[in-house]
Length: 363
Image (tube, rainbow, N blue to C red; front, side, top):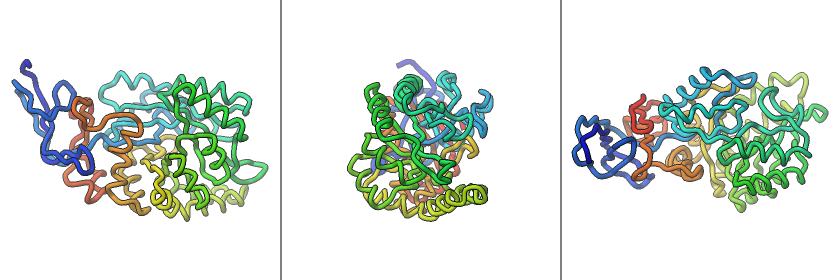
């Protein structure tokens, strides 16, 4: 091996929740647990190291009114990076962010294409707005644009009803999900309410975003089918303000949103207790700021999920779920170093000491 500069991370390296090592080395951007021969110009970083955090529901390239310019998307991605988020599942965006893949200083993104919604049943400028007969074709299109995921809008306010209601008939979601699976893509769906969940899960969906409508009768079905949820509790915190804003026009919807908010922690804890996979997602983009991953982990702990499990939901388990490596030998060196043990107190995540992306210290 010729002489080259290396990075030495020492202290406590959390390869897994119970797999703790004293050090790792970064050579040519890759992780090694063997001291390299002939190394020089060694830079040492000390502390508690974790795999780069995962935000499994994030929208790079999305603003309050739809797609944003690349310079704004870059700032969004950098904000996430500085919070320690080095892997993003972009859960729907109208922007083409493929240029990010050419930047070794920005988080890695797993895309779900653009949201697919029913006509006039989602936020203007965000989604393809179509009718059920076109769902299969659009699922195929977005499966081709994404990185193994497709994002549906499973429910939204029905103006005639004045409340949340499913956006798709059962036969349409069955056909759409089957098409995605035929093409090798997984499917997730935005769902606030209760009423769309059974059809989506029985149709074979892989994940539900928000999942505030989970009830005691639905939880066993999710657990049996292995359907994951990404609760986005930092977003659910906005429900009271949304309800107040819609009170005069849609009082039934407002009351429903408040009830979903009030039982949010019980919902998440009951899901976890039943064995439903729970992952960290912030719903950053649109109206919510980026860089909230630590706050979302803390919210899961507040909901009653043990600290180590909440940590796993943004590190080891999340990366395995998305098919991406953590701190394995030979993996790209994407890691975050903290002052103290995040397993003991997840609030440590809010203050990264060093951020290493593709083997380079970037923050």
